[in-house]
Length: 222
Image (cartoon, rainbow, N blue to C red; front, side):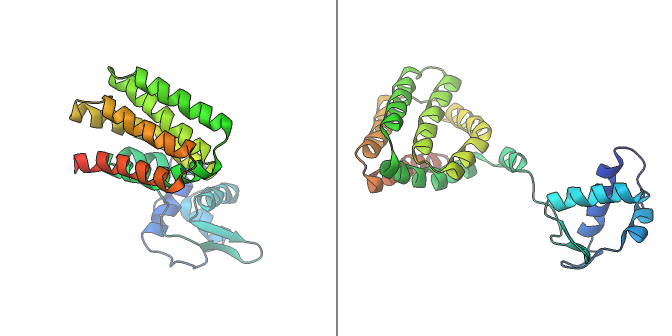
């Protein structure tokens, strides 16, 4: 049976234990063998095994139940969010934007404050100034859309938007290089219309304009 051969021991023990879980050695919900059995199998001490178990518990694979033992709660770990996003194609990223930003635009129309209006106006104006260089245009465009998400006053939506901003930037730059045109007056007017719907507290129009804009991006690549 494979044993740990290099440090850090806890990380290696966690990897070996995860391999055995993935292989189906234990069923979902099954209890792991006790420390005195499992530690020698992995070639580590009991304290190292406990740290490995803590690592896998933190990743959602194991759960320690006081007085009962350690149980299998998942047969694999979910991939880190940043890894998922790096693998996502442009269309997938745009579809994620549709899900987040359409709802955010609707909420922003209902909840925006005078400070939010000022931030959105400023971001819209800045966006109009960057029409010649792709990276700068993408950064200004992202800042505009983030201002709208922030105006929704929903921290989870904002965290989601911020979490995939690096992949969003990469995808949008790639998309604009494919399209070779960006920053034209009509596009700026569409963004202005979205901002106006939010300023007018028209939630339905804000959601519709946000969705229509992003759908057009997606459809241009399909």
